[in-house]
Image (cartoon, rainbow, N blue to C red; front, side, top):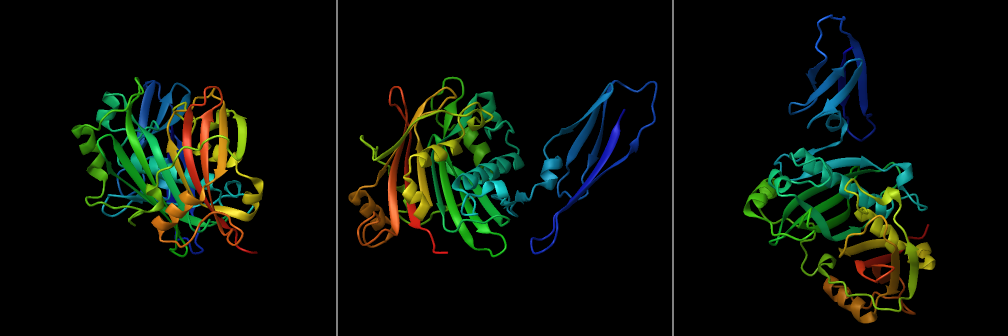
Amino acid sequence: MLLKVSCNAAVAAYAGDQIQAKCRVVGQLPSRPNLPRRHAVAFSSPVAKAPLVQAVVSEGRASRVESGPGGLADRLRLGSLTEDGLSYKEKFIVRCYEVGINKTATVETIANLLQEVGCNHAQSVGYSTDGFATTTTMRKLHLIWVTARMHIEIYKYPAWSDVVEIETWCQGEGRIGTRRDWILKNYATGQMIGRATSKWVMMNQDTRRFQKVSDDVRAEHLAYAPRELRLAFPEDNNRSLKKISKLEDPAQHSKLGLVPRRADLDMNQHVNNVAYIGWILESMPQEIMDTHELQAITLDYRRECQHDDVVDSLTSLESIEESEAVSELQGINGSATATANNQEHLNFQHLLRLSGDGLEINRGRTEWRKKAAR
């Protein structure tokens, strides 16, 4: 039996309009005694800018929908390449399960959205859909991208039901790397509410060794990158550039024996990058979490974490010398650490390490601002 399905989705503006999607079954084809065992009917979307093809495949009595680039998800997704094709924008509605006790999105939610829009951008330009965002040459050579550094700054957390628009783009970064940047805006007001940047390095999937980016891969990868350098953080000596020193024992705060959950594993069978943020926050003192909110986080990924690893999370208040150095970089007067006269801003250093041999998994640094009075 073969069903022919027609789908039409119209996306209206945010200000009071509704998003509608209607699907209907148009009917059944009459039975044919000589009907082939496997066949497909293709149809295209009347709303799509580019040809979008989807097939309903019948095998015996079973039918299934096969989607290629430009399938149903692409038609319903609120994202697309910008006019010049060199960046990608997508809108997201903050859902109730993505907010915390303050009724605003958590930093993990923000990080997940960054990851989602990055993957959707990669798919929109024809990169692989297996989670690695690899080019044709990379797949032939078994090469993948792995995260080396992530830096996120949040100026205003979006609340439940807010609509966030995120723009992202990629550029080259040295001989073995690439970078991806993001800008987050409140879609209703156009206000910039956050920025982020990341660095990725190329690794051989089989040997787990880093590898230089060849000219062929670079040409494929940068075909969709801005022609001139474009940075989410163009300021000289900004926070994203700061080196993170190793946190030495004994740490002031710790949470030992953390174990990856099955839900922490990504489609590549490794602990997802966002899980590290949650582990870092596990060792933050509760009194700080009660009175402050995270305004910036930097993570240096130093080792892959597997599903059977046991992890220790260590945290200490950053030294006055370290904080003053950051303040000078940012053009801020005075110390950012807690003192008798100033507790508006606090900086912490973090370390994730394997419980058994103490090998480093991740170094982190966080900056916190006092919560606004209600």
